[in-house]
Amino acid sequence: MTFVSLRLPTCLIILLLASACRQQPIAPADVQLELITTNTLIGETTLLLTATDKNGNAIADPGALRVRGDMSHAGMVPVFAETGQSTNGVFSLPFTWTMAGGWIVEASLTLPSGELAAETFSFEILSESSADQMTVMDHSEMEHPAGETSAVYLRIRNRGAADQVIVSAESAAAEHVAFHRTVVDNDIARMEAIDALVIPAGETLELRPGGTHIMLSSLHQNLAPDSTFSLRLNCNSGEVYHLDFPVADMLMSDLDDAVDFGDLTFSNRWARPARANKPHANLPMNSHTEHSSG
Image (cartoon, rainbow, N blue to C red; front, side):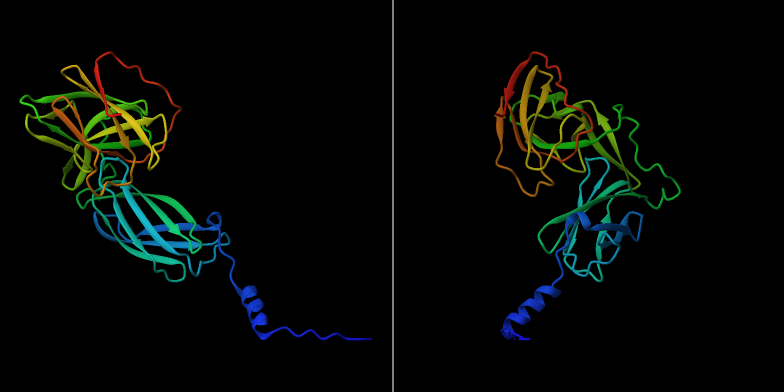
């Protein structure tokens, strides 16, 4: 019997061994995320996120974590935090609960492969004075049924000599459109409906997170980041303004989007992302003098 001896180059042997020992990249579908908070009262806390595989084993190198905290009511200012360091699959990052009420925290884990694993978590945050009470958000003035909501923001400048009053708003993207302002009593945030948006002569009205805003509820379509939808504003003078709004996570700087309609200038238009909860339905539109941002 004849034996044939095969000799492989040393570098090739090392390469084959390294390839055999290399851990296969984990897929986002196989990643399990668990998030807890060390404090459920307003103020500083630590978020602990654990990343495991589908078998419940800690992922040694899970990647980089980014979290975004939003109150259940879309008119509030979101809180962001991120870290690229973990220990045995556990991330620890400082976070701040800025208001009492319901919070939704989205955890986005960027895996070493560049793919994204994401999960959302709900928390109920209390103030010191309401620690013994479970009703920390008052939505009694919101008569529409519960559903996904978005908040719309913009800046309206009145260049004329008379006050301007926007009395209502409509959008094919949502069944209900209303004007709200944020009211904070003893560190407890609640939304208060207002009848109109008043822009005094020569002044500017700023609609922003944590303040006055336009609320869209019972959405007919998803408002995804980087998408656009239209909103109609009705003035007490009979003028109607059609404005396009881009959807974004957060506006970080002024936009170059100013448009003039009569005495009003509209700028810094944007809205929060949200998911729809019912099929699309068209809204009836009445006849007025109309302007469009195109």
